[in-house]
Length: 284
Length: 320
Image (tube, rainbow over all chains, first blue to last red; front, side, top):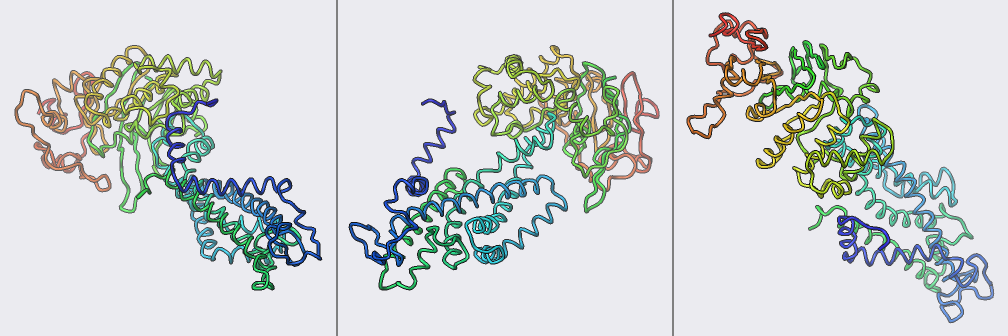
């Protein structure tokens, strides 16, 4: 090995690789990510250009997943849809994690009335059902890729604030934080180098699980017409388009549906597996 | 004098009332001197230590004066205090298992202390860390530098923390029960190490313990605290050969002896600091208490050279 890993990291890694959830989830997620990244190279057709003469063809040798009403290749659209889902979910979760970790961590570290206010706001945000908050935002800012990202990030945000706050409150009481003060570390340094790294394990797990939920929510928004707009290929919107041909051309919704199902399952398996490895106390 | 604490009072406001954790404590510490502070849990000895290094929670109210290196610490700006901490004043905590950040290696931890206060290069920092790990007799300093805290035993971690506390040649080292969380055999090793290191460094030590035997092993002078007050303070020899305060005498009688004989516990328990007893705080448990003890608080008086006692039964005649 090029990098010399210390024994505990090796042990965690070995444990992770032995975990079946991580192996299965990891393979699914890796496939999904590769599909998204390599879409331009592996998709057989342009996902946005259709041939109306090939409209609604069932799966055949020319179009393995068939075509939609506009004669566009569904396989290519599923592959490009992975890219859309990948962008929406990772960017929105990334934004939510950064914002949530900062707000939750600072809230716990500073405490007092600031913590009180942050907690109440988060409680209010969490009291909305997931999709409702995203719908609310999407309805205000309108449809479109960037707006879906904002809507999904906003609905993930309070969860990360709450998790980070709890985790940081716990880390804050550890003696090494007081010891850090005793060796003359500044508040900023204690926050960034003592509190954050010791609070991140639950965030990593939750981020994986929220990626799955975000893919679903983004697909849901698009299904309702409030998400990504045509002609950008998106699984939820593809299924929405297929409602008219639900029975007559089921392949139009089956393939994006399967892609969505497997991807979400993969992220959930990975998240559960990470939880087992990173929080061994939860193991049954 | 390196450190002069005058009439220090530390109190907390709680729902039950004001807790007077430290009440009118006056003491001083010269260079290269070791003061052992002995007391039961809740006697205020740790609060005293934390007030000197400025680590009391924000809710604490501090009155009185703490002078260190000709600076008044009670009114020092946080920014300035931060520069003292870890450099001129250091502290070793009781729990070596949790006092180290689990995500840093020992090398990074020690290097950061150096870089924070001295600047300089990583190479200098690591070579000093290595040198000090050798001085605290850590086997294989090089390997320990690249280890994470959880890979080391409690005794080893405490050695690392002691090395870190001495590395920058501070003027004052506070040790807050540094051996209490360790196995007895390790305790003895660490105490021997501290006694050895004391003669090698220029620092003064405040050594906090609930164990009179430990105090005797490391202290030049011993201060006995009870319910937030110093009740007796004298040289180590004087305290053990001529204890004057009934509480000190009680503590000495309560220590089990190898030769056998009765252990006499002090009856009762440490009083509440929200509503402490009137007069002498020890009077409800004191075998010699009379009416005056219940009404009037005895002052800490010098009864012999360097021997201070706060007891009505002593100050009157010099002997009771």
